[in-house]
Image (tube, rainbow, N blue to C red):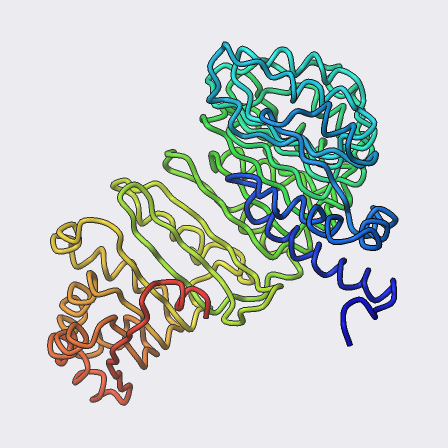
Amino acid sequence: MTIGTLCDDELLEIFSFYMAKAYETYEADRISKVDSKGLEAWYTLVHVCQRWRILVFGSPCRLNLLLLCTINRPVKQMLDVWPTLPIVVHDRELCFLPPTVKAKNIIAALGHRDRVCEITLCPPLFLFDSFITMMQEPFTMLTRLEIVSLFQRAPVLPDSFLGGYAPLLRSLHLNNVPFPALPKLLLSTNDLVDLCLISLPYSWYISPEAMAACLSTLTRLKKFDLRFDYHPDISGQLSSSPPTPHVNLPALSHFEFHGTSEYMEEFVTQINAPQLSYIRILLLNQLPFDMSQVTQFIGRIENFKVPHHAVVEFRLEYADVNFSMFEDTPNRTTLLVRIPRTALEWRFFSLAEPSGPSSSPFRLSCFESLAIFDKTDMRYWEGLEKTRWLELLRPFTTVKDLYLCEELALSVARVLRGLTGERATEVLPVLQRIFVRGRQKSEAVALAIEPFITERQLFGRPVATHHWDTPGEDAVANQ
């Protein structure tokens, strides 16, 4: 049998599979570049023979046929050659163009408002106003919009942007672009599934209550990314008694926040997101911080089972604390909290202080596995007080397995060996195994920690040391 003997339905099934794989490549590469071979893989099909050409152009929706328009493509000629297909306007290199370069191809493509389905642009300042002017009316087919500004003072998107109406929009990304009229536009985007507001400029402050109100009609929203590039001051705006969550986001599964704990605390009192499975919180350099409302918010999430694994990773300017389940599944629950490193860096464990709700998934007494990594100058740990290490380890009362990177292993071993008598059972009381990366380092740690192991043995709580040869932290983090 040859491919020429296949019937039309069989060929279309093969074409559909081929195009689906090609679009996967396009989606993976679109953040850094556009892989035209992925987006326009159908070019190859239509040039094989007349029969294939007829089949492909006869099923444009099934095969998701699109035309890619960039600043370097003669748009008018391209649109004259090919059938009337949806248009993707995508060019991240615009911002690097000199003022002498004309963007006539992009502007020509934006003129086809009834065909443009995706727009991804990073325009220079001298072209920003031209693009805004071109986008004052509705784009009736638009499903994805991403605008990135690399400049400190980007022009403000006006109330008339997109005509204030985008009924088919499913993905909206604004990076360092002020858009005070966003709440008005979102009223028409009932099918929105992906909303990312990155590096919100100071000129566009939106309160936690107003932000939650923006989401009130987005019942299909799956991903929400909110990032400030400054410290939004909401002092005096917090209510004395947090209201009952009144904005329901039943489909939200991915939530990322960069900002102050004060803003986060107020925002989560406004929303309910029972299906969240991935949460990433990066706090700006603000101490002391309060996360009590965040803790209660997490406690209301149906998918957030009590996590089993904690990973603490210290870097030069911040510390990451990652809570997750052992199971590596698509619905695996993960929470990452990034805290700025200061003299009070250990305060990030206030997330799990005993004063918190007993059902809180943050409570460190729930974890069976703990991994500690270091990406800083190891001399910092050599001078760290013993009490600091004990403060770090003491809350993990249920940890059975302790994973240590080689930079920290000896420091931890020296701290543990100093615990004698019953004190040896008070820190990590149910610990059974210590894993150290690298065989040679494991042997050195086993020797250094031997007094601690002996003490634990006397109390009937043996601890064994093992070498751990994984090349990186991901293997542990993904348990």
